Image (cartoon, rainbow, N blue to C red; front, side):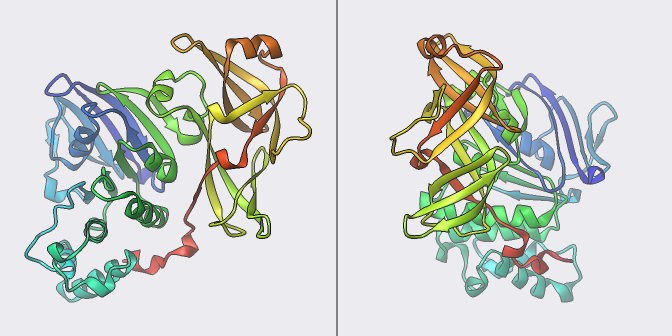
Length: 377
């Protein structure tokens, strides 16, 4: 609902230049992505009240937390913010359960122990509630930090590089936890990260930041399907992001059939199950364009579409082709020679050839996959 949305406008010249404006609605995950020193963490700190830019307006749920023109600033402890730091910031002398109980002072004393236990269960830590932070692994400490953020019954959840201090295996498990929670909590979630895999796995919307200013802002699917953002290509490589559902599993061949708005794709299915919702990332460099369907190839995926736009990347001598496959937009990175040879131009029908092993598939959480009762009042 719009009346519970987060609205932010920030501008300053020092110590880090900043000039951004965005909104994030309940149920959305806005990822702020950019190089180190671009102001990502400063934005989160400004929302939480830990930093105040020269010009700032921060509103959440119809309430104004900051308005520098009006001289208004709500104190940090009065802002219902759940903030998860990269370095956990847990009380070392308290147990995991004690850390959560300490964040529940806004609730009646009789409720705190039960609520803390429920939140530990939400992040699969109920069996380790008696341990102190030093007795927990990095991933376990991050789970406790996430549960503590939720203990504040936040109006907005802020995640500052939440997976940076853990290895890749733990990172994947924590992404699944955050995906579960963000889909159940129904509040605005703002994620700061330097890892684009975090963006692909978790975000619904994306704010690209460079030197404190927005390069682009919009839905993840729209932004990753635009051909005119060379900065994104230079930093992580262009690639379309698509929501899909697993229609069937062919266990004998180890393949999964995925359906999306533009058709169907076949991907490796070892970790997938029928009915599962997934998010696909298709690297633009892995898409081959053809004027006719191929024959005699070891290829499962051929999508038919129409050229919607082209963007010449003068720095690389390549051309980014945006192909409309039904309502879905797919990017392909090709040479100028390929554009000439295939007479690629807006309106031209083409076939997109994609290897199954080129698809990066991330399972998505569903509301039924997590006990939402732990988040109820």
